[in-house]
Image: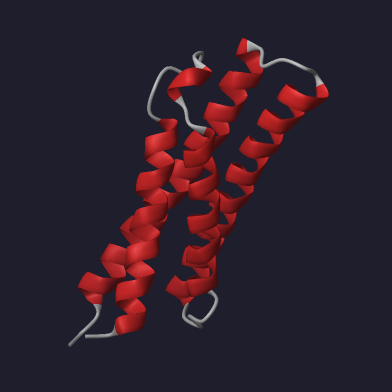
Length: 126
């Protein structure tokens, strides 16, 4: 068993599930989305990105690209939340929807990453 693949897969899937946990709920109601879950999703996505730096294959390049997209989307989501809350003084429906939409984009990138990872794992020979 390849422990690097196990740890990589663990963080890829954990990043996706944490992101889904934050994303799930009504886009207009911020109370349905935990700021702590968004923070956890960002941290786990960054760890998953670090795992993807070691892979020098073409698939590894695509995995790294999807991870970077997810990182940027989640950091942008947190930035919009912070700017709306502390810069503008309130979370409008538009800002709340933007935060959730950005995390949805990251969720799509995470889903793509997990699908590619599973496909690569199934394709690899023992």
